[in-house]
Length: 508
Image 1 (cartoon, helix red, strand yellow):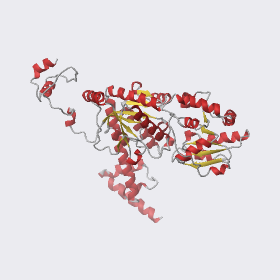
Image 2 (cartoon, rainbow, N blue to C red):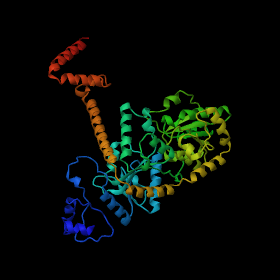
Image 3 (cartoon, helix red, strand yellow):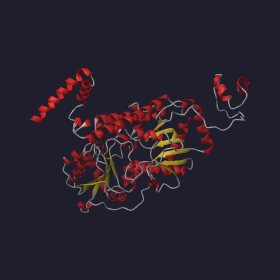
Image 4 (tube, helix red, strand yellow):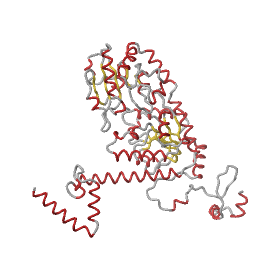
């Protein structure tokens, strides 16, 4: 109806669009209309004339979404990948992120920008654009966080570098388990942040059906905006292999190794029990536990309650030491009770070493019951199933390798490219605006809570320090005092009582 619009609001000059809006006409982007005489301008949002303070960018309007898709068609897809956790390659998340970057580069179907904390972390990434400062950065069509969000500030920064947000969620262990947090308040804050982050995402990716089902069960993701994309298992881990200090205590005997932190769900006490049961069956070996300790939710007390004869605990190991343990171990124990994916069993098989898993959570999904040698959670029955494989591991290793062969990083990258394009077509949601506002509020709450505790520590026995270093004055008592001192009718009486109590305390 461009002719009717011209007749109603013409001529076609700089004020034409505004006059159309005032007359109740809607603007559309059409591919069969010739337009001339209008200077190129940046698309604007009329709401931008109002003051929004520190709120993050709002979800794209229909016009900006159409223009983003046009740029994607004409110039190709541009994606920012959040890789700020790349540091030492000791964690599974780091290995996954590096493998994904390389796989996306191999597709040739995306212009990739990588967000890092430090430029030095870009070593080995090849010819890829690196972003270390989000201030003033251009917004690519997609920003993808390929591992779960750790804090509100984390996600708010992503909103400034990408127009549409994709978040990969690894698991809900921290969401479910309060023992992995410093306090109940910290746990509650993490749960609020997780829910808001997933609500803010345009598309949520789970890397197993197990994780996807958990997200749906907790109402943390809408089925229409949740996709499952498996990780690859074919990444190489080149480099030298170096024996870690401490393994000499095994005196050359065979050993099982369990790699990973001492979080309780990693189930390291079961591995200790398994080795003791294997020794009762005549196997003359030991156990190496290699991985960092955690501050909250550690299995260390349960480990110390067992006999640690024939057990070597190494703490964190380097990449070279990790490779040596994979290659030299008789088997790699992976008795985790709950995992989102789990690369360790496939890395073990790639090194020629049999993995020992139980048919629970994602391991049943990826390997099935037949390749899961551990019996949950019966160490004696498990030892009877494991012992024959320790003597002849080749068939088991071949079977695990075959199961992992269908999971390639190239296929992961191909599926993600399709999901990026799908994300660009999704309509925006009011829920995303509310989620970003909740994240902003959570970030501010965290800031002021940190400021409170910093002041309390700095001021010592005066000011905020009156609550005591160990929180001797409970919150309800602090509120009561504040209320009494804040009212003229009770202020003086309260102060007299406190002074008298102070004198009494000093005389004793």
